[in-house]
Length: 297
Image 1 (cartoon, helix red, strand yellow):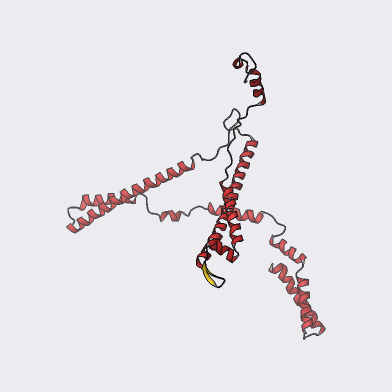
Image 2: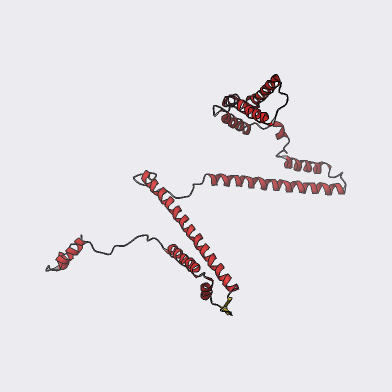
């Protein structure tokens, strides 16, 4: 941007200065300064200059090369090989067995010529090394068990809602059934969201009603016709002209509670007989053997 756009602005500025010096205008008034200041950006900041700079910098025309190159560099960075010098700084895996063998060799070879203090120190070293060997074995078993459990959990079959199979194969499911399941899922989410909104509205109404009751408990003693009286809640609402507000909140709360208590019927049972069955029963009533004559199929 500096070379493509601001360099053109600088050239326009120098051009105006050279023109002023060529004409002998060494002093500028405020109008000339404002006019020159307006002409310089108009000449410097042009669409051609900006597009040219974008083309030089690679911003225009838009391509996927910068993003792809950045992703490739990032991916190659993650795959960069580890420096072998770093692995040499790690402690050896067999350091504790080597220390245990060394302590045992020293005890077998030089135990007789060592002093009592050195012997006790050597015994302490052997105990510490033995403890380190046991702890390392426990840690390795724990790490191996954890890795095995993680792999088992990763390969475990995922639980969830399964599509209802159709046809002769267990894994067959029609596209329409998938759409129906998705529609049912969306409908259930919308109903849950609607019930949550109704609960919020009911909570707001109950909170407002509690605020009105709290105000009544604090200001139940009022002056009526010059006499101080302790009004009941209904009388206080009428006196403070808040009975309509409270009644509206109470009605809203009751209506929302009734809506939340409504439950959709899972199924209905039709106990009415079909017209054909009724006609068959009526005709069988005039027969000699009604039970044999009736046809309920």
